[in-house]
Image (cartoon, rainbow, N blue to C red; front, side, top):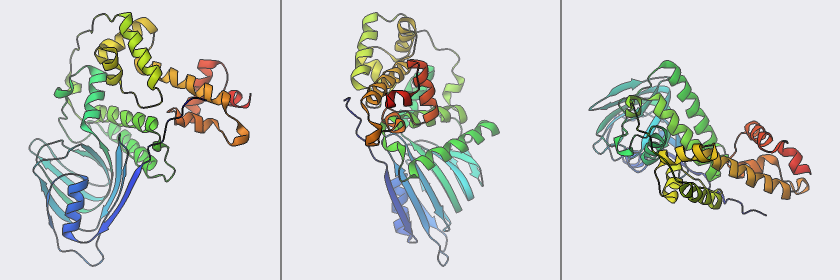
Length: 327
């Protein structure tokens, strides 16, 4: 039977306090070094948070009836996007500023001094490591990671703001679910890439001003074979494009061009096909009498949506996955 990916569970932490020093320390440990100044704490006022983490993406639900202002000289260590459900969040840096209220979407700038003012707020956040966002930007546009910068902290249009609000609800809900599918590293990595791609379309950044990316030139068949071998051996774990390219000894854009030229697909399209093959083998060896299900097999191989998995499976193999399981 094929080796099954080991789950990497979602780490959840609950926090609640009305002590200024304790709250400030929580903000420091979870978000950024800061100095906070609290308004007089009203009776029964508290700061509460549920944080959810995977190695690829995190999300929090934070509520407070304590008003406070703060300053972070070093800025945030990762990209932090948020949706306001109640109250207000004011963010000010040297280059941008906004006051977000109910249903507004905004982000904190990365690695620059920032001031913030919180007034009885309730927010959902999505946290993404900077290197993940920059890697996706380079994969999509060819812009070197060192040149990726966000130029604003609010969405570029109302339609994209609505889209990101929905995506934040999806990420937060999936991570808070006690039986979260994001315990699967494959699914967590895929959702993190989706969130990073969305952020690059929603918030102003340097990839939007990229006018032209030079072509990568030709890619030798041997390079593609090295990439294919790496995917075949590692399909059970997250496989970002830059890792496949490094294993093949080339750049991400050259690899993409080579896969299209030699295999008629993309590297990540090939990863998807290999995972479908693994799922097919596992379904053939599964037993419904033991409780094996199509949904469980699909999730192990990175397919979170049963309908899309079924459609992709049928297109690849000419039958629905349930027929393979029952055969």
